[in-house]
Amino acid sequence: MSRRRQIYEGKAKILYEGPEPGTIIQYFKDDATAFNAEKRGTINGKGVINNRISEHVFLRLAHIGIPTHFIRRLNMREQLVRQVEIIPLEVVVRNIAAGSIAKRFGIEEGEQLPHTIIEYYLKSDELGDPLISEEHIACFNWATHEEMQDMAAMAIRVNDFMCGMFAAIDIKLVDFKLEFGRIFDGDFSRVILADEISPDNCRLWDFNTGEKLDKDRFRRDLGGEEEAYQEVAKRLGLLQDDENGPGEVVDMSAHRSRLRPSTPAKPNPAKPKK
Ligand code: UDP
Image (cartoon, rainbow, N blue to C red):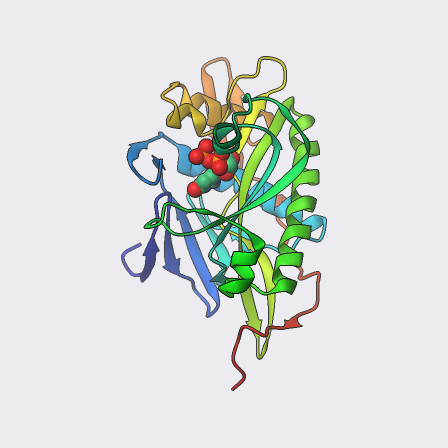
């Protein structure tokens, strides 16, 4: 690992220079943080499971035509992804009230929202990721109007797909966070899904018991984080289990498919012409 150049170390991942230009290696750590990194800890084996769950979800999203940064999983903790220019937004999709929306508006956690909501937060640790409006995004040129339309459309498709995927394994998709990035082709750019999708950035509740199978176990000191992450992987068919307890993460590399861009590149007004 030492021969590779580290580009960035985040809270849950490390990024290394990839083998080819335009690629990056994402390394998934076991570190967990919450409340803007005020609370820190580790969840044993989280990196291995999130790497696998994120691969599973991104591959399936690619199959329904959502462009993602995912290229292929390299090993238990690493995946090769396309290098993108990260759009400095956290796009949160909510189906059921929980967390900050429940607190902000005094809604009881677990209440089904009348319809799905998309919220935008500015990705800024210093500012504590403030909630922002589309007006702010346009005003400060964090994303163009067209990029906003693309992100919102993709977020809704991801939500519909994942609601079904999790419902099939008796899990309610309460809410989740997405990040997007730009890839450039000359003066043209295109928005693709980046980062990861895992129990770190989704709220997942057991359909029957309401048990939390996500990072809220860590945020709220509920315990059983490792088991909760394993349970999600197990229900998705990614973890082999036997009577001695949870087993190996299943290697599905035989079923890998490559990302095929699905939408044509569009001019990017935010990028100056040469
Ligand atoms: N989320 C995330 N990273 C963040 C903030 C939120 O992945 O920095 C996810 C979180 O896991 C949840 C959804 O976005 O699935 C909505 O989170 P919320 O705004 O309720 O924030 P919280 O309650 O975590 O403060």
